[in-house]
Image 1 (cartoon, rainbow, N blue to C red):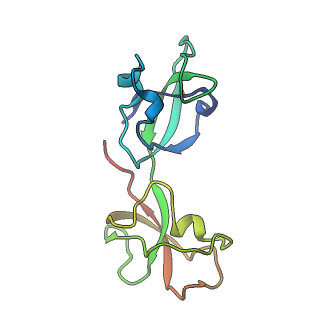
Image 2: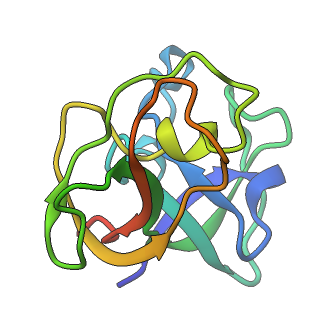
Length: 149
């Protein structure tokens, strides 16, 4: 299911993914608040369509203004503990990882998923992209179900 919202004009290409981080202090008093602040904080979205014949509106947060787009929630890929990881089960992220140079870091600390929550696994992708986990974790790369709105 898609939602219509306003996002920064630089982000309006179809296929662009982003995590909605909520209201900025600069949003106070903006006449477009209801159209902009209508997504769920911490959820990953993808732009599926740019509304035709809409104007770019001035925005105190986005330097090039905002435009109307249709977005949908997107599944998040993540590394989870291998034990008990199968499609349909629930899993949590293992915990923070300081090794930002690791090819798996983006999956151990994925945008759009929180450490203190459980997510339903929709698909097992397989082995993580790293050859060796610096924290000696036994991990499996999975895809969490997209958040429901």
